[in-house]
Amino acid sequence: MAPQKISDEDLLDAVRSYLKENRVPVAATTQIADVIPIKTRGTSKRLNDLKEEGRINNTEYGTITLWWFEDQLPPLDDAQNQSSTTHHTPPLDSRWSTS
Image 1 (cartoon, one colour):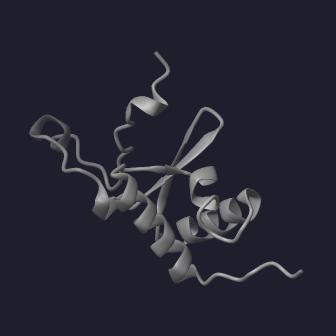
Image 2 (cartoon, rainbow, N blue to C red):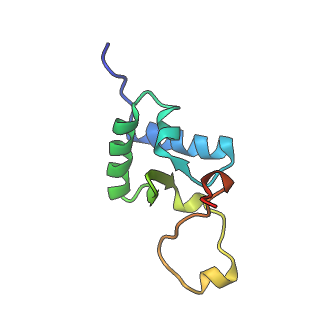
């Protein structure tokens, strides 16, 4: 059986849907791969290609790659806004805590 194909837009829509449905600012590659017809390695490659195009952001957290859209992050408070950067790393929820 040949692998199913998914367009870039459908992949990005799947990420947006995952973030919205789970009410989280970021998603791990494995979480995204679980909701689309692409295995984790293929999902990672496709998301990295989209990152290179500036269509999605990511950061490494240990061995996990977290993905997000800049326009879907909660606003920064005034103290954080004073150190302006183009992109910032989103806050992590308690599931990603190392403490």
